[in-house]
Length: 285
Image (cartoon, rainbow, N blue to C red; front, top):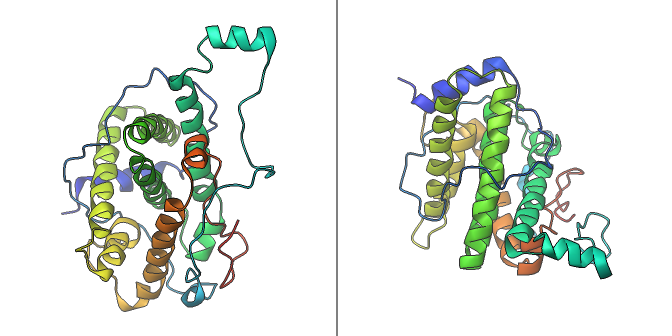
């Protein structure tokens, strides 16, 4: 019998693809759910289909030395708070625009936009030769959320709090996406199933990077969470090359994020490794 979250994916996949949802809405009233203390959950497979022949030479990708993902000070991709002076600043300050909570919410919004810029665009699907379905996009979304939450958590209490805002934004966006896909009845049920998948994946990814974990463990976790369509625990020979390449990509992003300074992370002024113009050394923005 398929796991219940696989049944959820199968149902949702029949309704619609996982399209982007316009952000910019207020998220301060979203129900809070903690990600800091996650109970162990199953990391069974997410059903998806993928091609076994990659259009790029994955064997030569993601081997380069990790580097910071922070955007340069003059990058047009940077997002900065408006620098008001005088009466405007006083009014905004009175309205708590510069409060820690407001700044955290704005930073979390930008971070989530960075996640979407990697997950919603065609490049990652083309590089790893993936089919853009609801389940595949959700799997990649969870993977990149984990990368961000893991890095933020390394900054202690402030990072955990920012990660909470980021999770709330993610959760609200997923709810909008599921609703847009056609699920209006039993929406709460489907969201609970997707939440269990999220936490299960997070636990599995964390475990795969523990010092005592084997090198193959991350590859196997990525196979189960992203690629597998039959519940198998290890990739088959045809898929191994692609799954190993994604594992290298993930390890490199983990290292790059660890080199990215706190200010860049908290403001969202960083970008995941660009995959748009794929080549063996196309690992910089």
